[in-house]
View 1 (cartoon, helix red, strand yellow):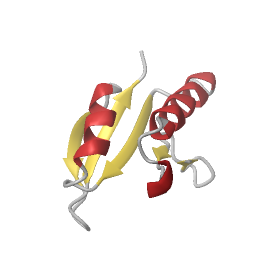
View 2 (tube, helix red, strand yellow):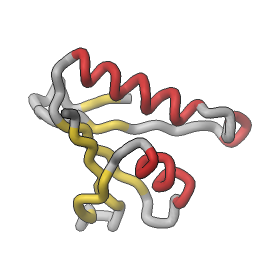
View 3 (tube, helix red, strand yellow):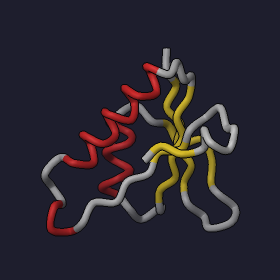
View 4 (cartoon, one colour):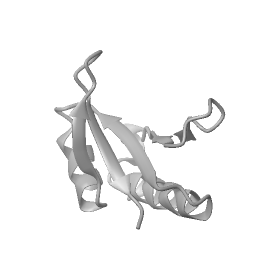
Length: 86
């Protein structure tokens, strides 16, 4: 999911949930790649996501996809990541 545009944000937020039964099939990467493509088509400069600090599988995926940790959400301690489009 990409959200935030309807609320006027320039930087959309990416989110995905994969059911355990479908884990390991590459669906999260497919969803992330599709979201990045949509952002490119809309000429977005930056994409943001948040992830629980103990979710090592998701963190590895995001970092391999070029996301960089840029902060920590003070409300829930989730890690904030950004991807910069060039």
